[in-house]
Image 1 (cartoon, one colour):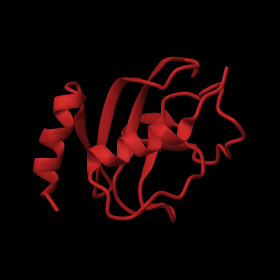
Image 2 (image 1 turned 120 degrees about the vertical axis):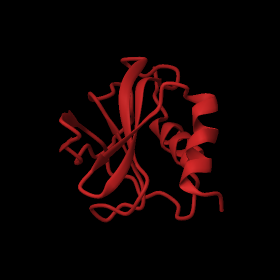
Image 3 (image 1 turned 90 degrees about the horizontal axis):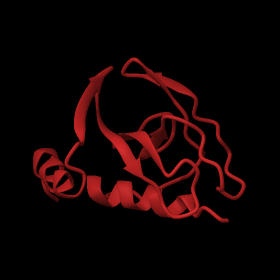
Length: 114
């Protein structure tokens, strides 16, 4: 597996505005104006990736606002992290993914409908 630094540099090729943010000993990845899958409303949000185990989740993607169009998600992750309020839904992810895979996996699970 690549180092965190290598993974972050790879991620920046696809998300050039990505930034690292440290809070409570956890290094998060801030993704400003992240494009969401088709039919999601809004179509862009700021997102915050937690790439390590936290609150019982191996990885979690927090959003700056609720996303409309997602079928039946349990929005239970209201958190204040890095000076902002975030929301996320309950979704158990796979273990052992690299940063770019984590983001893509979380976006895939949105599955917004019309």
